Amino acid sequence: MDAASPLMRRAMPTLFAVTLFVSAMLLFAVQPMFTKMVLPKLGGAPAVWSVAMVTFQAFLFIGYVYAHVIVRTSARAAIVHLLFLALTTATLPLGIAKSFGVPPTGGITFWLVGLLAVSIGLPFIALSATAPLLQSWFAATGYAQARNPYVLYAASNFGSFCALLAYPFAVEPLLPLHAQSIAWSLGFSALALLIAATAAIALRGIHGAFRPIVATSARPTITQCLNWASLAAIPAGLCIAVTSYISMDLAAVPFLWVLPLALYLLTFVAVFRERPWLPHAHVLRFVPYVVIPLALGVLGGDKGHWLLMILVNLGAFVVLALACHGEAYRRRPRPIG
Image 1 (cartoon, rainbow, N blue to C red):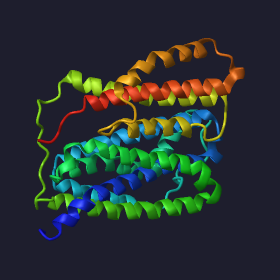
Image 2 (image 1 turned 90 degrees about the vertical axis):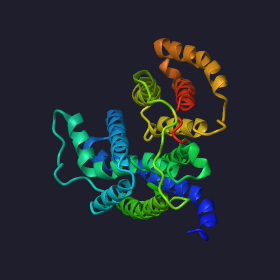
Image 3 (image 1 turned 135 degrees about the horizontal axis):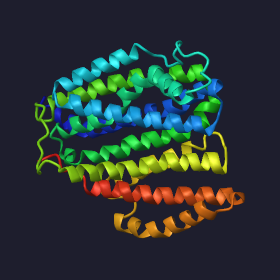
Image 4 (image 1 turned 180 degrees about the horizontal axis):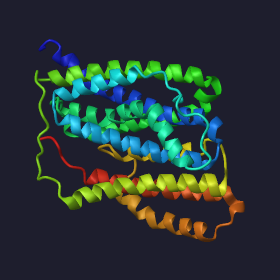
C-alpha cells in the first residue's frame, strides 16, 4: 500500500474525472438516441421532446435519491451499486420494450413516460447516481482535493456537453440506430469496470481506510434546503420552457432541443470550479440586461425575426442559469473537515 500510494495519489483524481466523464457521455447520449428510436411511433412533434426531457429529469432525480440513500451505508454502497450495474447490464442492449406496440389515440403522454421507464429507466437511473456517488467516495478518500468534490461536476457536465453536441453531428449521421445501441452498451460495460476501480480505491483510501464524510457545519436548515432546491429548479424549468418555445413557437428544427440542454450543462462547467469562467458578481450585473429584451421579445416579438428571438432566448437563459448555478455553488455546504 505504501509503495503504491504515490502512484495512487497522482492517478486518483484522473480516474474519478474520467469515470464521471464517461458516465455523463453515456447518460446524455442515450437521450437523443432513444428518443430517435421512438420517433417512428410518435413522429417528430416538439411535444415529444418536451415530454421526454421532463421524464429524463425525473429519472435523474430518482438516481440522485437512490445515491443519497445507499451512500449512508458507507462501504456497502459500492457493493449495492455494483450489483445494480450488473443487473442493468443484463438488460442491454437498449431497445423499445416489446410490450409497447402502437401508441394509443389518447393519453399519449403517459404512454411515452411508461415506454421510457420500462425501456431505459434502469440504465438511466444507474448512470444518474454515478456523479453523487463518486463525489461521495472521492470526498471520503482523504485526498487533498477531496475538500471540494463539487469540482468533479465540471468533468461530468463537460462529458454531457460533448455527448449532446457529438450526437447530431457525428454519431447520428455515421451509425445506424442498432450500431449506436451496441456501442452504447459496450460503453456502459466499460463504465461498470471504471466504477468498480474507483470503488476499490475509495474503500482502501489513500491512508488505507475509508473515511466517512463528517460535516463541519450545522445541519442545513429547511430554508437552506429550499434555497438549494429553488436555485436548481429555476434553470431546469427554464431549459424546458426555452426548448418548448423555440422549437414549437419559433422554428421546428430537428435536434434544436439539444442546444438549450447543452448550454444548460455548460453553465455547470463554467461555475462549479474554484475559479469560474466569469465572476459571479459580473453575471448578476448582466441579468437585467438580458431579462428586459427577453420580456419585450416574448410579449411582442415578431416571429419573422425567429433567429434573433432564438439568440435572445438562449442568451437570457445562459445568463440566468449561470446566476442560479453560481449562487448554488456559492452557498454549497462544506462537507469535509
